[in-house]
Every structure is written in structure tokens, then in C-alpha cells.
Image (tube, rainbow, N blue to C red):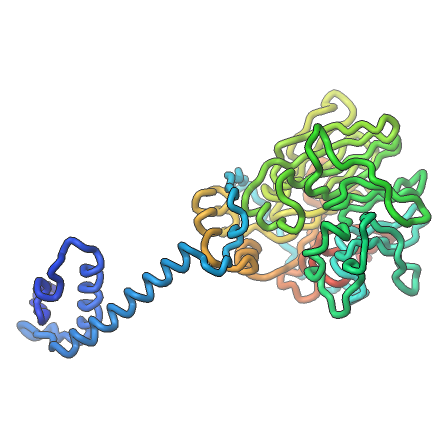
Length: 452
């Protein structure tokens, strides 16, 4: 008998007959399912009710079916026979804690008018994954690096091949009809993946941060880029990301991870890997120095207008950090801004302010996922496709946020397309002649927003 509301519900057959082995958990579960299913058919106004044997048999059949489904689902999740888990091919995957800033410190500023929706989308399907946008010292361009490994140049009428980073280019690297930025992921390590681009304003040389081939340089005439740095302190560059160059020819660049290549950037994000570095290359001495180490996904980097410091983005934590090159604080770094999302590249404008491109805003799922690595690893072991895991991280859909900060880290302006109707997944913002040129490593176009 089970009591409810002071009345007696009698199951038939009684539970000792139904479940002879009361020590096992499954019979108990099945028994309670029977009660749950049968309870709606009970008249609680009667002194007592007897549940008919046919109803019990029906409930038991359903309960056993549910139990079988549950067990099969548990086995599927535990074994992942089809390797759908994002970390199925990473046996040594480890998840580290990401020390997120307190929610109270995260800015809540929004662009209520979604001004980025007024952007003009240009060169649709002519450029695949144009992450970085650059203009040469004569103002020509834009130049951008593509997913197929080429660096191309807009001459005012069409895109022309300008340079490439891989000495091993083959037919595998040729542009593919109806391609997307993801069509070239499997050949990136062969064809190269140019990310950050910067021109030396004095010489016209273009410095390139290639995800697979390290730091390179190509002259104003273009062609095959010359390799400058492929390792530092005996550790090969695994994921070179962004670059900038000062007036003296010192080159500053970021390495997002010493363990994960670019094609596994989502596993890098999910792991919280802290092997990232910020480095300096001296063109005169050809020496490479590590300036900052043990960073979780360092990404964009940009020198200040006067060259006294540079700022760089901490991609996983979502912060803007300043590193002093001159003055009393030279050689030290400090956090100047907690960002409302997770940044990609950063670029300085003529006024000395910094435009930061956010890959996405912060959301509760990603925030707490970062704080609890053990739970994160359990979730990542589930056979949930990486695309779904990615959408959970970014709040369900791609969107666009770009923010202008003062040199001190004060938020000056924010522009958004919160629904991703026109612009989404912005990687970089380059300001030129009153316009913002928006690149994206995931999109097949460049967007242009008019500031005036």
C-alpha cells in the first residue's frame, strides 16, 4: 500500500510479488514509474482503490521500455561509438579552470539600435574567411588573408593574388568553387592560414602571422613570404595569431597555444589551455624574446599610437591587457578592461583609441563552464557534435559586437548586430577614412560600416 492524501492505494499484484529482489535499484525505479503512471487513474475520494492488473501490466511494459531506452542512452553517451564528442580524438585532453571576472565587473553596455545592421556587405563569396584587414603605406587595399592560404589585394576593380606563406603550395590549395571558410580546414597545415597582417609604414614590408608557418615577411612586390620565426625558447610555434611592428622594426606577435593548432581552436577554447605567449622579434639581431607567457588564448595585439605600450586580447578570459614598453612600468603588464565578451583582434585608430572585435558576448553557459573544468570535461565527453557545443558557448547564434576603448581602457563606443542579420563573428575592425572595415575568419565577405 502507498498512502496519498490520507487514502490507501493498493497496487496489484503487490510489490513483493512484482519485485522479488528488492536490493536492486532498477526494480525500485520501475515500481515508482508504475505508481506514477497509475496514479491518474485513482479515485482519491473513494475509501480505497485497486489498480487493475491490465493497467499494471501496461505500466510495467512502458516502464521497462523507458528503462531500456535510458540504459541504451547511457551506454551511447558513455562509449560514444561514433566519436561525436568534440574531444573523442584527443585522449590527453585536460580541462583547466578559467578564472572569469565576477559578473558584477562585466560591462552591460549595449547598442540598442543595432547600428552594425547598417553595414554594407561587400565581396560576397569572393573572399573566404578574411580575418585581418590592412592597407599599405600608400593607402591601397584592402589586403586580407584567406582560408586557402593566399593573401590577396583589392586593386579597385578585382582581387589579385599578392602573397602566400607556404613553400609547399599545390593543387590542394587552389580556390574551390562554392567553397566556405571551412572547406580548407583539412589543408591549412599545407597551404598556410595567414591571420594577422601589418605593414611597416617605412619600408612597405608586410608582416604576416600565419597560424602554421609562424612569423613571416614579404616585400612590397609580394610573392612567397620569408620565414622569420618558427620557434621560441626551443618550443615550436603551434598557433601564431596576430602581429604588429613598431617604428624601430621590432615585431610583436601572439601565439595562442603551444599545444593546439588553429584547426582545433574550439578544443583550445574548451580546454582553457594556458600555454599562450606574447613575443618580440628584433629584426636587427634576429632574436626572439618571450614577453608574456602562460596566457589562455592570447589573440589580437596592437601598439599604441606613440609606441610606449601595446595592448593584447585574452581570448578565453575576455580581457584587454596593456604591456608597457617604455617608462617606469616598462616590462610590466596590467589589465585595463574587462570585456563584455570574448575578443579576437584589436587595432588602433588615428586618434589612439583601440577597436576590439568580439567573437561573441558572454553567456551564462560559457561563464560557468569556465569556472568548473571537471563538469566541462564531462559535458565535452558526451556525443554532442562540436557545432552544437560551439552554439552553446556563443549563446545560440552568431552575432557581432565591436567596441572602441580609450588608451586607458575606458569604453568609448559600442556597435552591434545582436541578431547577426547583416554582420556576425567579427574578427577585426580596421578604421580608415571614416569607415570601419570588418573582417571575419568565419564569413565569406567583408562588411563596411560608415561612421559619419
